Image (cartoon, rainbow, N blue to C red; front, side, top):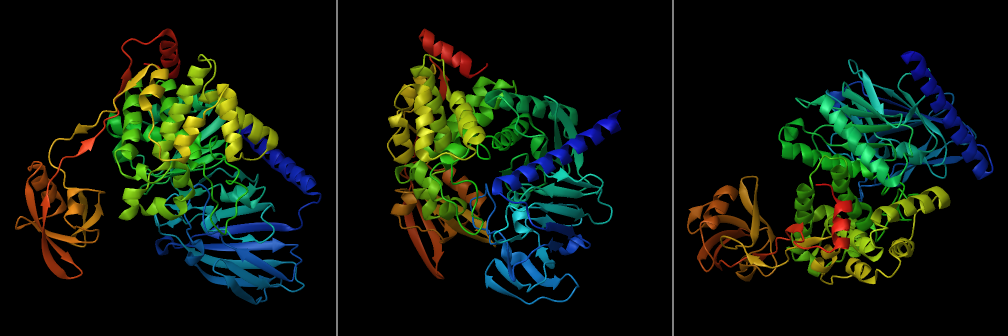
Length: 605
């Protein structure tokens, strides 16, 4: 019975794919011409190269431009994947070499003449542990599709199959792509946008399974260690159920969590997510809950980013940056909901949620960047500044994740207050999902997002949108009071003395990586890229430097011996006082009935 059920499921997948393909063909007014197929192999994984073969039939143009994307959606940085390509070759249907030339850094022009059959092959170097990059070693392989599979210019909407040939002794291929029945490790994508949205994990990863509303969910993980598998799968199920209840439906037929091993970050997709994973970080209750928040964030993105999205985020231009002012909505509101979802699922207490909220607010409010950069500017400039937030940018930028989460809270609290707790930010998300994703089948503009928010609130939200687009200070106590909450915004002196420069060990040298705005270190003339040799005549490392400074008090003088451009000099730093706000959140002592009702509906204790 189980085998028959699985075969029926696969049959439904193939039928759906064919129906999708036919529908797409009619929508374009014509049937797709020819076929496109990739085969990717990895015979010597310790060399870190994927070998890729593309076969195209029915390609009638005299020249074909093969293009490798320059970035991957969800990871707002130009990656220049073409730099990893080598051994490019092209042949006709008879195996004769075809002439080709590079016309741009990510474009190979093949002169196919009258031959409608083309075979292109190339190798891709893959040895960067990241959810946005491909990786291959003798333990596992991870394919970030935008960095491995080229598309033919003008034919990005063409259906395509991918056959994965794992190296010897690897038994599993995990991906969000639909399998092709009767062809092991072969998968189908109705177009290249879907192909690029489905990373692939290859190896001997463990598989954990659960269902939500009859929809299969798979967690494919590398090196799960001592993780309690049954508890983790049960918690993931509760998380998914909580997120689904928020929007009201499941828009996919299957979902795959790809835990790819150590690295950095997570990356969302339509029916999967790629997550870096280190089992040792899950051994404590706090570490386990941080991991759940991380997974919750990436999972919720299949709604908020992949379907509920700014209009700039799809269809994509894979050659260059895709700018939007609304990453504070796409990422920041997802930060707000990641812990709300866990709280509603009973996986985080109300106090734990408050602790996370206050940490998120404090991160950007206690830095100087909030005086220079708005949430909309942070969103737009992410291509230049987000992945290089050192030196000057550390002092003059914010994270749209942090401020966006705060703005999401304000929207939720304000909408609930204005509607006497009849509407909330949940209603905004549901309306965006229904109106734009399902009905209009597109993203929304900045103005359309604001209109939906104000429609649900029944009035103007101009102040919150001013907070988003300017550096105007936020009136946290007023907005938090709407939700029956008190927030501590009073500046307080931190214990110890303030130096104001951060230093890191680099190749045996202690180098200044950041000097805070208006800090004692800046006033004394210290600079980024100065090497700190000694404090008060004592040689220091990053650890001993912190220990020495922690033993001092405001007003003390410290002699700092530095090397700047190979010249030795000594400067005197007068240590100061550091003032910060805690943004501690707690329930109001005497809430009115509306405040009490909103707080009760917002968070379970």
